[in-house]
Length: 95
Image (cartoon, rainbow, N blue to C red; front, side, top):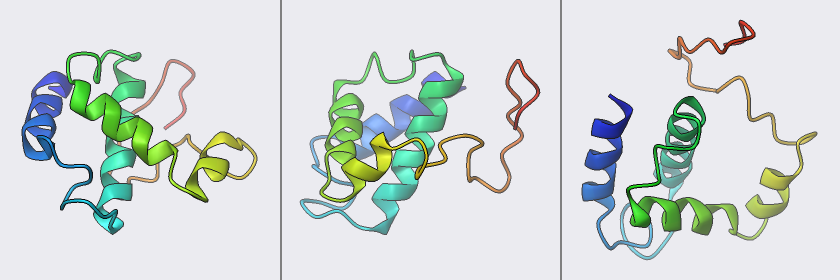
């Protein structure tokens, strides 16, 4: 299911820099979180087949201000995922 969704997201993003064009918008942060979750759950495999998603993810991590936040594990609580309806449970029982 992750691969199918990655394919659809890759097709939607196509050659765009961000979700709706050349400028980052709120939905880009939502998409970034989805891609991060997909990549985490697939143990790094979700983005491997989709260069445009890899580039997009990297571009998002380099946004001014966000880059410092993303790198700082004390400021940025990457897990558990923020997605309210997430039912993912890892091998340690964390959601």
